[in-house]
Length: 392
Image 1 (cartoon, rainbow, N blue to C red):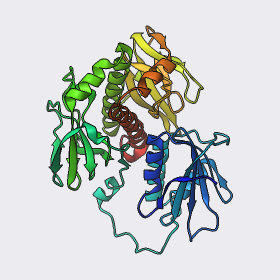
Image 2: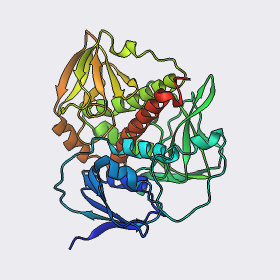
Image 3: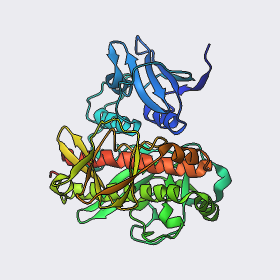
């Protein structure tokens, strides 16, 4: 009989939270969800932290996962075990979470649970309160050298200011906000285990200006991380791995900038794809990792409403298959278009993964948080393009 490695109640941990926990721990096994309001249990199968299949009654795959997000009351049990099912879910976990939260808010997913009072009439800010909350893995307190508190409504980080501090959220929720000519634009919410700051900031690299404001939604308890210790960890990496980490940092800023431009209707998709060669096609099975030596590359997702640009990459940046991180972009969820002068060099991803596995838990958590933010912000950009933003 299998041991259940994670158990609990959906009133305490939502399915979105569970997916983030299992993803952070790259868990392989079966999540079983039961409810007194449902005749059949729901099953979600995970391989290396990613949902690959699911079932509930007559539903299977992503349809089953979508349905289970509507369960407001129930018990869950995750059993770590070998999984032998077909991989039919092609979305990464952050795409699943964001899509399901949006469908729940739009009433496209039936809610299953006790009778509750109807929602009060919403005001314009209610829509933004449904932003997903990105949480991080278990916190490594050995890297926390001090604690600070930010009160509700206070800015933890000011956009446009220089800063070298790096924090991890110990408790509470904060919002990532960009200033625009149309007013403040909320991008994401981050919670316990999420990091505030960037590699550029704590290393005082060029471009260490804060690219967004971070505002406490309610009181937030922050852990101040040991920047000197993190710097030593960083300098112990190979030049190649350091370049990959900095490239991820830049990519998050890129996708955030582009999401804002889409919201403001300042994007011309032709600039990303016209006269460009296709290097990787969305959905293509690619096991290689590349670094750009000359030219530039553009990451673009094809959706039901058209192409959505996500990132611009330049010499020193990486693209392709990163086996230890899921950024929700290429190769499965976006294409790569290259300029005519694009030149690339192939990198052995296995060597990079071996080095990743030797990192401190804090640095691994930090890089995973970067990847999750890239994935979530990519979905935000796509939602803006659909009409919740850019087409107004």
